[in-house]
Every structure is written in C-alpha cells, then in structure tokens.
Length: 554
Ligand code: GLC
Figure: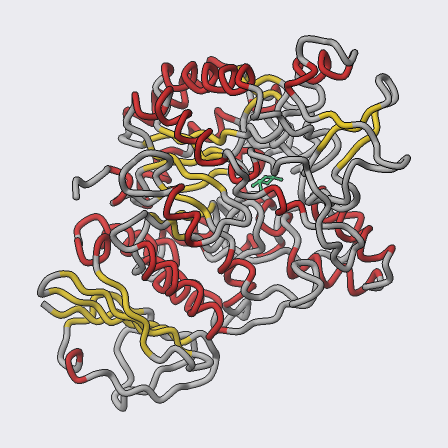
C-alpha cells in the first residue's frame, strides 16, 4: 500500500473562539492562532484542523455559516487568514478547514432568497415541504431539541433543519447546490489549504419521501434517520472526482450514525471518497441506554473496548481509522474516563493518551487535551452558552426527566462547553487567553494546569504527548501494526497488542484507581519499555492506579 502523508500525522484541533485572543475582545482570533503556531509545532503535531472561521451570526458558534468565502469579523480578516496559512506552511504545519455544508445559516444569501417566495430560483437550495394535517411534515427531531421543521409564514411552508432553526439543511439532491459547494471548496483549495473536516457529512442525502420514524422518549424520531441516505456515497464520489482527487488532501467526514459497513465506503483505502471518518460509537459507550447523552454517565469499560477493538479489527486493510477522545463537542476525557484528583489527574491523562495513540489510525488532539485540561465546575444553567446543552436541558426539564440541580450536574459531566472554556496558557490573569473578559469563563484550575508550567517540566502531560507523537512518526508498528485485544471482559484493564513483521507492542492500561494484578505474557517479560507513566514498573508486576506501560519487542 502506498503511504499517504496523513497516515503518519497527528492532528491538532483548534476551536478558534477559545484558543488565543490577540485584541482583548475576549474572543480568540486568527492572529492569536498565528502567534501560537510554534507551540503546536513543538508538540510535534503536523496538521491543524481549524473549527469554522467563516462569517457567521454565531447561533452555533460558527457552525452556521452566512458566507463561505468570508471570515467571521471577531476572528479577523482574509488577510489574517492568508498570513496564518503562510506561516503555518513555513513551519511545516498543514491546515485542514472545517466544511459545514449539510446546512448553512438562515442569514446566508441563498436562504434569504429561498424563503422569499416559492418560485425563487434559490427555493430548491433548501428542503421545503407543506405541513401534514396542520402540523410538521414529519416527526423528526432536531439534534438541539424540538422539531426539525420550522414554519415560515412568508410562503406558508416548513423548512427542514436537523440542527437549530437558524441552520436550514441544504438540498444536496439539487445538482446546482452541489456545484456551488464544489466551486467554493475549490476556491479554498486554490489558496493552498490541505484538506477538509466535513461537518455531519453523513446527513447530506435525505431518505426518499422523508418518512416518519419511531418516536423516542422525547416524542420525536431521531434526526439520525437522515444518516447514510440513498445518495450519500454517490455525492461524495462526485465531490471526490470533481474536487478532492485533484489535490493531495486529508479529508475526514464527521459521520453521525455511521456503521462499520458504511465506514468501509466512506474511508476506503481506494481513495474514492474520504481519507477517514469520525465515528461516534465509542463516544456513546457511556450514554444512558434510554435518555442518551444528557443523563448520568454509564461507564462500561468492556463495552468501550469492544467498540474500539471492532473498529480497529474491521477497518484493517480496507479503510482508515481516526482516533479521538476530545473535541469541541465532547466533555474532557480526563473528567470522563480518568481522574480529576490532584494525585491522579496527570497520570490518568497520560494513560488515556497512551491507550488511544498506540492504536491504528490518525490521532486527533484537541486544544488543552495535551495538558490534561478538565471539565468546568458549572454552578448554574445561566453560565452555559452551548445551544445543544441548553436545547436538551429545556427538553428534559419540560418532560420532567430532571430537576434544575440534576441539570447542572449533567452540564458538569456532559456539556459541550466543558471543551470550549479558554485554552490555559499560563498562570497570569485569564490564563493568558485574553486581556479582556473571556466569552466563556476560564477554568479556575488554570493556576496549576497551564501550558507554561508544563513546558518547563519534563514529566508533564505535554511532554508525554510529545513523546507519543514522536514515536508514531518513526515506528511502522504504530502506524500499521495488526491489532488484537486481550482480556476483553476485564472491567478495569484495557490491554492490546500491535504487531508488524518481527516487531510487536503490548499496551497495558489501568482505567482505574485500583491496583490490579496482571501477569505479562511471557513474550514481553524481558521486552524494552517504550513508554510508561510511572518511572519504573512495580517489582511484583502489580499495575498501580491509572498505570500504563507499552512493551516493545523486536
Ligand atoms: C457538528 C459539529 C457541532 C455542530 C453540528 C452542527 O456535529 O461538530 O459542533 O453543532 O455539527 O453543525
């Protein structure tokens, strides 16, 4: 197999609003990112995924775009972007842009035209339907709570929005829409960007007739009924033929509702669609079986292992995996599967990093994950900004599933805002993120969890990530090795091997604060220790709290 550059890459995700402010307005910006590029290079990541920086009224923090070829004014100008791209390339860093084309903003020129009259030439750019018996055209819910349809009195019809009502879904069945999008993508690629992260791209082809679905506990059918629709692969192959294949890119599709079988098409190694997908199964392993995400966390390590191992096994030789714990939509992994305690936080952060980074696929590091940043101690709903958290909170409250107090606890565990608090650069005021008032509060633990402190200290989480990333760069067994899970039913240990030719790795991770007895397989008993989060293994072979060790045999 011919190696692609992104198969050895580690990607660093930036959420621009929260990364670095350069002008004191409390909102991160492009110049702030440019000023911090050396830090990203120092970590060893070679590619940056930028969450959306396009013009947007910010109903969903930039995931609602009103002009795909302009920059959000809080973030700067196109000249600032060009400078960022140029400096990144000078430093050997690639830039992957977010591409949000399942929907636009309702303030996009296309939608303003589309809603103005039923015979407007842009009408068919979006999905309009008559109501059914005086109600919505079908029973789908929006991902942010409530119906996925909004009635528009101007023409007396409903439009579909799988996210907020300010994010109308584009009609991909209209070839003119596809061509507009392809032209816009090409415009960015001509500027020299290195790929796209495609937002909820699995939802672009809606099922024929938009049928009702089985209602869930909230009375609506899941918006995931729109996932992997009848023309999904056809449209992506068309995009690939007309645009992507003309460049050497990293493309990653965020694929809500993707199954393994589907992923084999989306991310096929034949290059006919995308480089890889973000799947969600492992992120849902701790969801409540009925109430889903915004309910008490249900941790189950054997289930998590089963899911991650199945993706490792099944995509081998057929398609390419992406690997992630954190992103701007997920609570922080240390708070989720590790420990926030002073004693164990760093150790658990290193263990979680090891478990993920020794797997097959392209790893993604989300800003602050390399410091072991944690969830925020929210104390009131009025502190929450995120539209998804607020929509679901309202929904759950209205149905009597939670009290306000339980809601706040849920926010501490689950809200997307946990990932969106400002990056913790140093111990000065507002963590060095801004000289003004940050748009979301800085986590009070910035005084001891921050980049400056970790850069000074050789045994920090930052330096541990740096080491993991450097290992991937040089070791084929990490990039290509065959994966095998050991001890599938163990409730606290995640153990697997990777093997490639004569080389092999044994990765042992203790996902708990408890000591564990584990007998290392004979083959690894005298093997070199590649990386570990305790200075020496325990003499009797016991695994201590949150311990991880990677053994290497040649
Ligand atoms: C994706 C984004 C998320 C956004 C949604 C709608 O899931 O990651 O942040 O809210 O799509 O665009």
